[in-house]
Image 1 (spheres, rainbow over the protein chains, first blue to last red):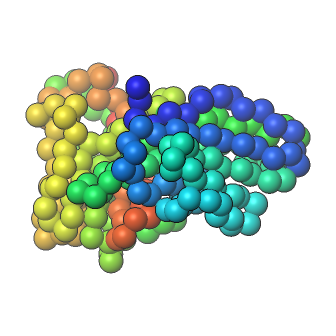
Image 2 (tube, helix red, strand yellow):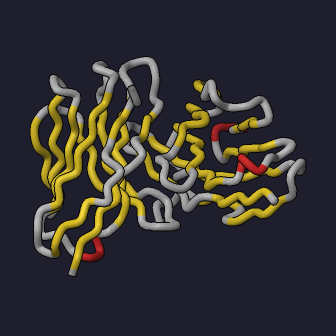
Length: 112
Length: 111
């Protein structure tokens, strides 16, 4: 079992729709969770961080965390063609390490 | 621009040569990370530093790879005797608390 799992996609949504991206992780002691956006040929860009159960909203982005289910999700409302990118989920381990583990990413395509 | 810089941005080298990459983190960040990323994969952890101390190194990392962070500022990643399988994007990131920010990366091509 991979430590951080994401569906590789592509996930295609029409412009203006809600895109839902999911991530599961195996280390139950994980404390910090992040979503990065990566455009082709560029480095990852941090878009959301979440540390406690529930929802966290920032503009069109909402991150959701459920530690009991070991599940993190990212919702993108009013999706735009410029949101087309690969979205990476990253998990930082429990106490004793500050290492981050990344999933393989989900490719999102927003169709105009 | 996150404030993390990497040099060079591109490197083409012949198999068997040594290469060195440099990363300058955000100045107030005490943790610095190196990753390798290949097409279709997420960043793969290589190693990280807290100040000048190298705290963790990937078990997958060959002994041809070495990293340093003298004085807890910039860091270098050296790959000795490069192989074609080393071709990848090498990413550096820095953090102070939890949020980590990436530099633009160094793309290595081994011919």
